Amino acid sequence: MKSPSTASSVFFSKFGLRHVFIALTMLLAFGSVTVSAGCKKKKNKVTPVCDGTNATYNSTVKSIVNANCVSCHSSYSSYSGLSGIISNGQFNQHVQVDQDMPKDGDLSADELNKIQCWVDAGYPEN
Image (cartoon, rainbow, N blue to C red; front, side, top):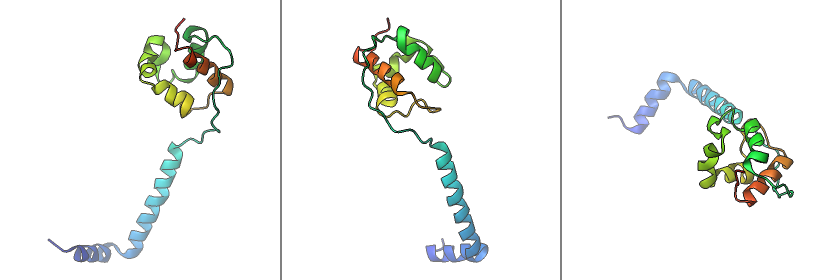
């Protein structure tokens, strides 16, 4: 087996330092494009506060979820479909705290406040 210094000498003599530099530059450039394309800049987070709405899933939240979530998460089209992420805390974490859902847009402060009323009431269905 060749020593590391011998292996690197063979590599550089075969490909040349210039080619290695160009390859690394392209890798870094395309890597940063890929990363930035995958990350959507979100608006400033708001602190959701219940606006007094008597929110239930059927009266308030269902229309928000259908308009913003179901296109990617088809199982969320029903209360029972949301039950898993409600019970494990992921709904509240992603929608209210991190505000990193929905991926394709931001919920308005009004929508977040109505959802907060639903959260505060214990996620009632009706």
